[in-house]
Length: 222
Image (cartoon, rainbow, N blue to C red):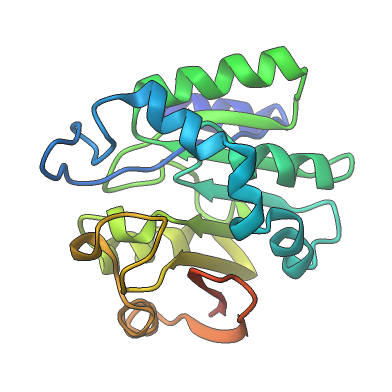
């Protein structure tokens, strides 16, 4: 598990990585808001049936990556998007996969070793800080994670800081209504709230995609 000091060391040697993100606990959940039964939770996140509504290939194409970017996947979990983005990158491209749940980071690290994927680095994060140096990333992706942030505006400020000039932020999360997938209604965050809070730190929506059946999908710049 990589903290700030080791991340700086990795950057000095031209290596990059990724970690997953969490939040305040809710009823019946663990310390970071994840269900107590992590094995079942991870299985649901990696279930191939998720592809039918998450549309990961379409989502990644919408990023319009050149292939050499450094991408930060905030709330990466077991690497559902981190692995797919990493495979789409060319030599020199890399993914930081951030998560605050140590067990989730261990699962991701084991998966990367098993798949022999070298351009993703798991990093154990913190609910208040992504633990990446300023100006590290070309893109930050926040997928199904924004509703977990305990202090949303403050964390957005940290994400803005780790972006390079001209960097982008992607936010995908569940519409605040009853849906067959996603967290309970009380834990969802409306798109309007995300846009408003992002604008407080200088982010503005430059593209919105409507093809996901249960989620809003916005691309921000600052």
